[in-house]
Image (cartoon, rainbow, N blue to C red; front, side, top):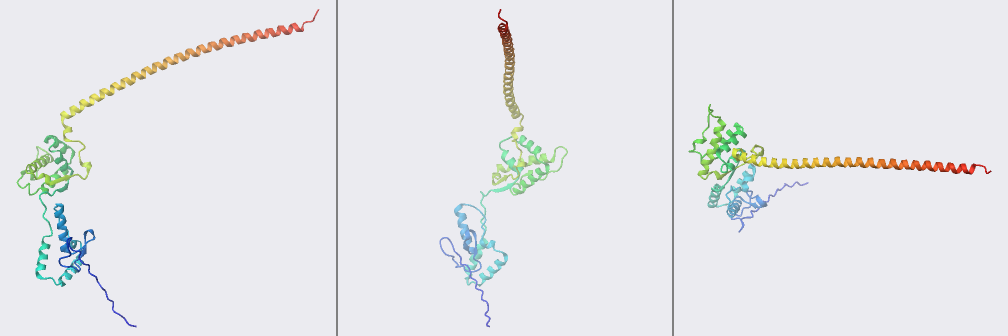
Length: 306
């Protein structure tokens, strides 16, 4: 019996290349991987395709290559396979330069999203209401720990832009004012500082927990607004009172009608009863007369003839 050695044949995938042509380096080794859209690409072709896509869309994003998704073991294997290729030194240096520029630098129009309910409320209402009313709402609704954390997040987000702003410093406890009250003023002041320098729009603060957003606007705590709302409420209460009075009058009228109907019903019942009594008396009298007539007739027939 003859034993034949096992032969394992590994077929390396061929790079599908660029949109306008084949792979410039004719890659057909372990560095060719399956990437986005089920495309089989090498590192260089994947990078070129992605940069072309970003340029067409006008977006500034980080370039993610196929080789970034490859596990560490596969990367070492791909490195060994690449080292065995007969690639000229010039091509190797060119590939190295392309690898060094994997990331596209973000443009100035890139917007960063930061989750903070307090800061989103401040940025949304700061241009629409007075500073004092906004401060009252923040101090009343949010805890001191939330205000302190929001200030630290705000400073950390705009660290370079607030380098010369004195409001970013940490506050110490004071006997004259509460610490979180001062920190609220610092947050509003830093927002104004950044807005004057056109830096505030680069970051969008969003809310993830809607329970930690006040259910009212800062202007709703204004005494003039409260007076106007009270006047509107008084008018509605007066209208409601008039409607209730009308219903009460209709109710009283209904009661009077019911009493009148009851009296008429009693009167009708009495009249009918009297009529029935009279008819019954007459019927009794008629029955007595008939009985007398019957007795007389019987007595006449029964008497002897002389």
